[in-house]
Length: 166
Image 1 (cartoon, rainbow, N blue to C red):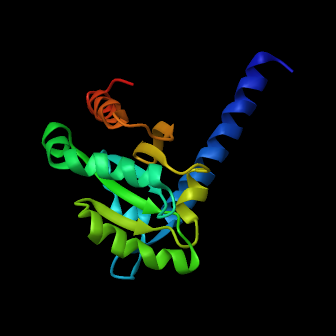
Image 2: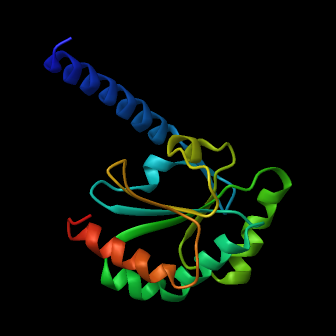
């Protein structure tokens, strides 16, 4: 095969994979704290940075990350335009712990439960905690794990991406 044919074939394969991922992202359903199912696509706006933090009530590391972000959330919102959503991976009876965790910690950002794993599957998320920054359905940044102070790096990454840098 010639190089042009190989490049054409690779381009087609990548397009199909992107289209499939985009479709599954559009179809992803989340449960809000009031118990209603909402589509991920209805929660996002075009040309907006979306910060998605996957967490679990059984992961102290993920709760620490969300508490660190919450402590600075209002300042972050003034510094860079973005939409944040904490998405719990808790299932079954553990999903009932999400709302009390949110209330106990006083989180100011939107919190959802990925009860069917739709969003985690669409974004190929395997780790907890895992932080993903999206724009127009494309993953711009992915980070697994959290250590104290890591929230400052995350803010700098948001600022850089908002300025068009990577």
